[in-house]
Image (cartoon, rainbow, N blue to C red; front, side, top):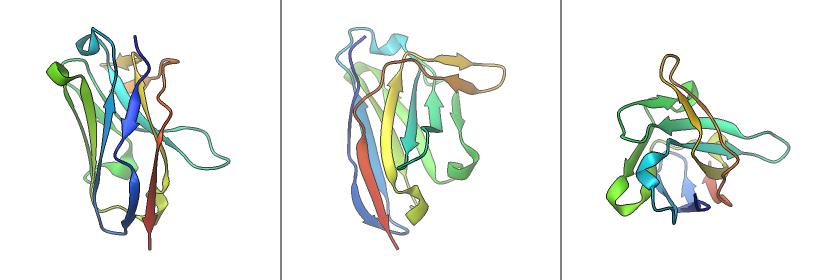
Length: 125
């Protein structure tokens, strides 16, 4: 599978919104479960949300439930993360992961080694 590429990050005021996109060049985009993670300096990558290959199941970290929405458009090889009501603590580099394992019983996602380069999201107070 191809390396994912994130876009859509930027600077936004608290309470604002951003939509991140993740695209890949893989021919079988619709075969992979995918997810978003984020990382701040000195911290490990933190799970945000995951979506199954057919959009049938999604999983979210508790701290984004009700604010962020993950979705995907398989015919166009793109996955999205709609982020609303952003907070300063959402400031991080956001990464796309593809091809991980989705645990349908627990709604949990184990990432693969296939990561994008990330996109910076900065939320000002």
